[in-house]
Length: 372
Image (cartoon, rainbow, N blue to C red; front, side):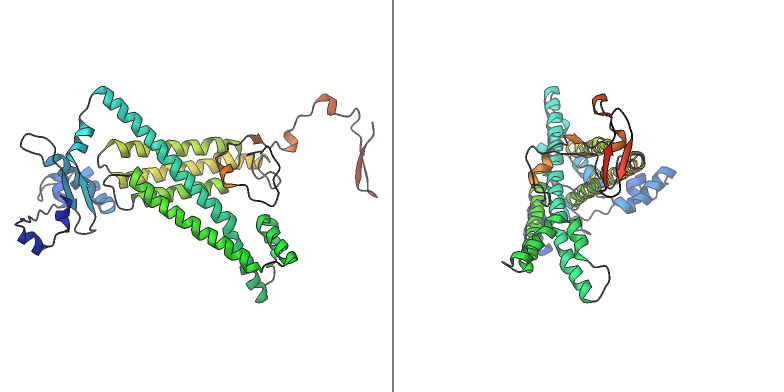
């Protein structure tokens, strides 16, 4: 039982539990002996073990090496005396991974794929929600900050710039100033309370869903890294993913990388999960660089992405919305259904083209007339 790991030396002695100290060095793990000679590959592996550690190697040796006399698996628990992390495995769990019919194997792989897709949906959805809240409500702190800048006599700290950049806050502040029903601090603290509440909910989801999605012995910081990668993806999508090609490419390649990592995670009892985060991060970085250099820059050079058209594809609703209002949170689950075409790429029909192209601009009325 894993309760034995919590016993002190005195309690273990009273219960007649023998403690055997087994020390395993990196040289022994690499070559099989403390005095063994290392090859070039083993030397590189011993050097890299300083980065990714030896926990996965030792845990797998204990899981698959310590067996009963008939060769069957045994349940066990192990604790790192350096980090105080604890890992455990059950005999039934190892038998399920190693044994089973073809039908059970197929069903298991389908379940692995479904769990990977569920993890992607839950993690990216709650991360995109907190990113939207931090972006929409977090900017309210800029307004009192600009007020402090003006009190110190700093030039250029004009709230009109913020009001135009963030109309859902600027319009509300103007309405509060005109109506004077409540002070400006009420609006600020209301958004601050919203940020705190949503962030606490985000942390609670991270803790609760990790119990379901990662319900086995894992490296201690693994869920934090996964949620951190999702946060990077969401901020990158918000800032850089603007063209139609990027919108088509980046979410799909992100799903592929995420699913491949989790298929590996759910397919083995205890693998090199922390080490596998390194290629996941490198592939993620490659996808972001490719999106910016190969997709975004050419579209920006062609004028597809500009100040007038910051995003090529967007979601068009079937009902009117206030221009100074942030769309509801549920709209982030709607797929893009409209595409902005630059004015120079638009093709007009023959019925819309005038018979003569003489364009006369009258400076007195600043109007344009077409002479037919």
